[in-house]
Image (cartoon, rainbow, N blue to C red):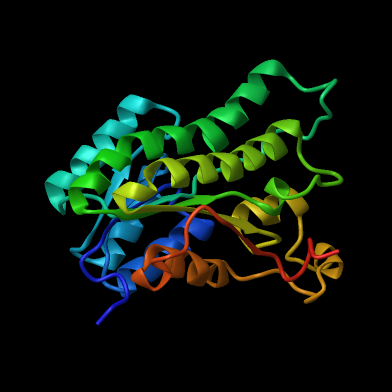
Length: 248
């Protein structure tokens, strides 16, 4: 018996990296999973690999209309949604606040912050029909502390926003048996991180007390816990998974 048997989950940004890892773990634990991404080719490949209990929906997470279509498709295919993993994210440009291009700033905020708002707004009525649910907002250690050399104030600001929105929605919808938590990964071996650092963790891993980057599946273990009934009294909290990077 899987830890997510009977649950219907939506996972955004699921065509690679942590999103793909979350999707594979959820499917292996019995969830019916709706994978979403803008990369339709890879998303469909993953859904095909994972079998009948998994579908892919092409999805612009910045669009409220697109979110409505995703939730409707999930309900039509599997029933009311009980888990949402707001995973989609971008790093954005490397620039200080003086040099930051306004349009690029808004693009980062739209994907990292606004998409989580639209996701929660759209999925909560479905979770009410399901009798409750779990929302997991993927933030970052950049949502806990300022980061030297961070891409921009857009990235850090959006990740802090995810943390605050999580707490607010957890308080608002706790009476509906809807739990909301944020996850704050540190250095994870994903295509986005490797592209940003041009390495596989050698140099930046030296800054981590555990002296390594994490595998995406290690983050998936935490996300799986928060999505499951094992975390039935866990809500409104930030969960840092960074090998003690931010401990000092």
